Length: 204
Image 1: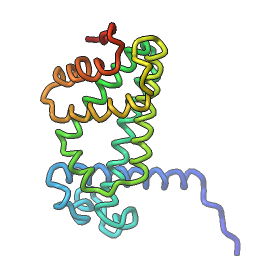
Image 2 (image 1 turned 30 degrees about the horizontal axis):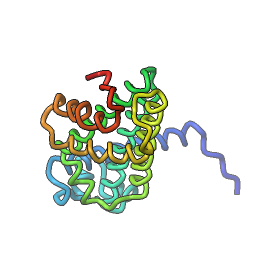
Image 3 (image 1 turned 90 degrees about the horizontal axis):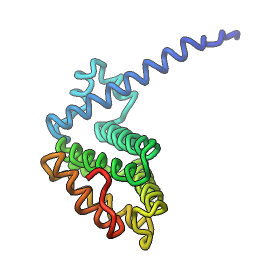
Image 4 (image 1 turned 135 degrees about the vertical axis):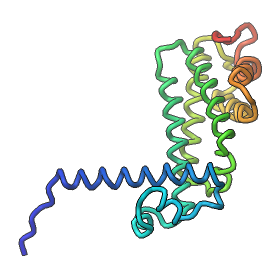
């Protein structure tokens, strides 16, 4: 039996449509979880808000938890991309490090304010999120190593250990109520622990 090949344009159009539907599902589920709480979100709600049928929704995801797990992974990856952009910027090593720390403090605050910590804790920890967390640790460690090579940051402690301390310290930024307070946390606590005794943060 002769079968005509599927036109490439048609294939690309279908793939684009599926990607758009999947993105809409993720966005809708995240918004519902923030607005109404994780336990109140149902597949029927997500389907109705997204504008698709339940049968279509189940073709993409088996349950609410799997949708929110992927949504969470996407958010973590987006934040990591922002920090990577800072790390690759044209600033001096110390300013790249400080800018990344300030942005991470802001991310921690945004996550806490929107209930992201509770959402992440309720979802199963995925290998993807664990891998992204390791990439975050490596990124901050690389920035610290660059600053140490420039004589700004202490080199008597391995960068990986300093990075782990820094990330855990900045997680406290979620409880701070202003950007000024987040910046003070970076400049007067975290930077003091990282920098040589004679150095002060360039942006402080």
